[in-house]
Length: 366
Image 1: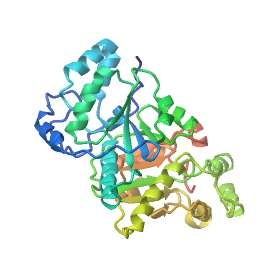
Image 2 (image 1 turned 180 degrees about the vertical axis):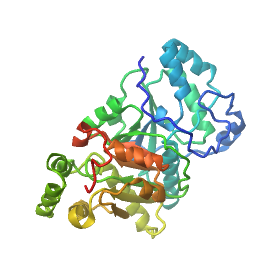
Image 3 (image 1 turned 180 degrees about the horizontal axis):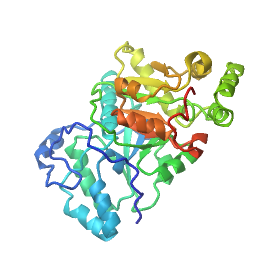
Image 4 (image 1 turned 120 degrees about the horizontal axis):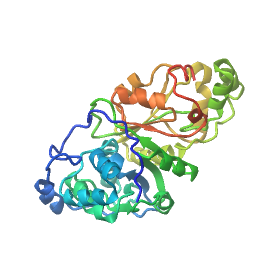
């Protein structure tokens, strides 16, 4: 068994702790206090994978598992398994993907109110390298936090990527950049998620998802021009190709399924209070290079609720105002800036930018 190396940036726990006794292995918390709630709560029917919007989430981004990871790295797999079994009645604390998953469940509640028989719902699959022995603690934690997660994939140290297509996965979130890259290579939308650097509350009634443009929603075609020839050539290229659609990027499909769910709410008269809201947050300039991006989205039939063209300005302050449950970007510089402002950020390791070191002026104007 081999666990992936820790990729989640460490910092203060920014997630409001609605379950004070939850821990990452450092306290004697128990889930017994909330057990009656879960036993008396009627859980909805799980949708079929082929009908659902499937979100595969690593246990290491859904929960805080730093203590357990340290045990594994310092003492080995046998001691790690022993530790997990000994602490299986102590629920894990929420990780960076936790608010996102809770927001998905909120959307499902609203959808079921309007379409009681619909299976076009978010379906969460917990994906973990852990041995099945650890499953008891994970189930206890899920029940403790009152999450509706019925599907598990515990691989005992093997790569879970082969199972993602079998689950019809629309998005995979992990702490392991190598596995994320492997998923992207298989055509699965994927990102490495990080803890924010400070506490910021997010909406409990509306799922907010923010996307970068190039190498996230779109291909990295334009970014390659910028990296190779500079800003002026990039602007020239965009003007000359204003009416040529950009090719799709790795997260286009996820925006598409969000859009399909939004339209179901619109059809019932809930456009203004839709529980899903999407954002484009791009370093592109509006007048110089924004038209092509907007025309591409329109040609794809995709609506973005809000589009922010920052012309090279930092994204962090804008994301602090948006307070998304997740923000996708292909450049770690922007991910780091976002998390410094308290945003839940996810890195999409795709495209030409992965070959360049982070630099504060590396993306100015694009």
